Length: 216
Image 1 (cartoon, one colour):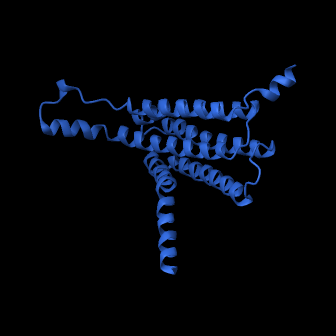
Image 2 (image 1 turned 30 degrees about the vertical axis):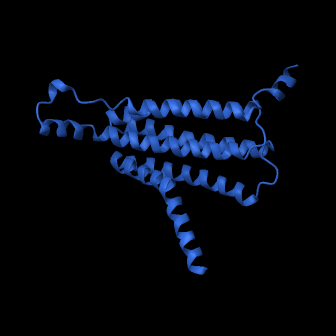
Image 3 (image 1 turned 180 degrees about the vertical axis):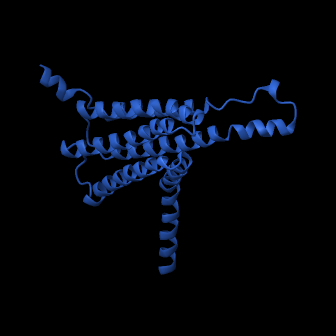
């Protein structure tokens, strides 16, 4: 009876998608709650308001960085799920573990924003980011090994997903290692990695389109 249950449990991809969307939406909304409007009692001039807003700069930076992180992870997870024919109980739990790490992101973001110069705070944050990508990689490898992918998926597509996740893990780990020198360098490096994943594909598509137009 237990074996039968394990075969039928967690096989609904649409429910996994729905849970993922809800957790991501909630976590991405929570990120902004750490950015508080300056206290009116402490602001009596335009200059003081500007100074109060500048003091919030680290929190805005962390908000932007974490929002990008979650956006990239959401797209990566959806890309994987879109190439699955079905799920199973084990894969569902792997993705639930991934969503647990997503839910922790607002905490690690607030911790780093509050203690931005402390390596411990950065290591908590960077560990959160690295574990997100590692869990996604493990989910994809498990899906391949368990033959849960759709039929007819090109080998190049599977390899591209593999390569993208492995590259992300490598870049995040190298960025985290920079905190030995300075946490600000690590934060800047992670931010550049995220901008690359979020923006670079658009420039690449435009470049290919221009080359195509030039050839016609």
